[in-house]
Length: 207
Image (cartoon, rainbow, N blue to C red; front, side, top):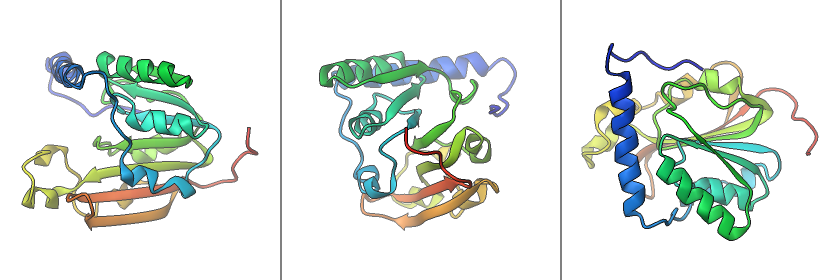
């Protein structure tokens, strides 16, 4: 998966700024990964309980830990080593197996699959057709992200970090089919697009 081009000379500074900002935020969190979003837990009946899962740009692991509790073999990828450390500590405390990978999602390759579940929560990733190549046949992709209409009520995220209204389904490519999609002013007070998609093909027998 290729990263979008950045202006020459700015690649390292942008990544360093992002890493510093998120490291500071997770330090301020006092080592608590937080609770999983109700948006994710409501999808419990649709999501696999066995296989490999990747939580991309998953921060301190609030979703990765929930997936691990359900029986998945989970990898958490994020730019913040502090956030990943919070997740590892919480996983050890609960006796959960959790792999962590420090990477800049905008520059580094996606961790190699095949993945039975790929989770992207509140991180703007438009290369979903490329992400699909790392999903196993029958694997699921879950994306939740605010759209531009969110600016009508909330100043952040700014426009550069938002999906266009109605954009998300068109990013999937031919390998993915929509299982569930909703967009609008949803129960948490933000204008979001929420998508569950499945890679076409026959899933392998449960491992």
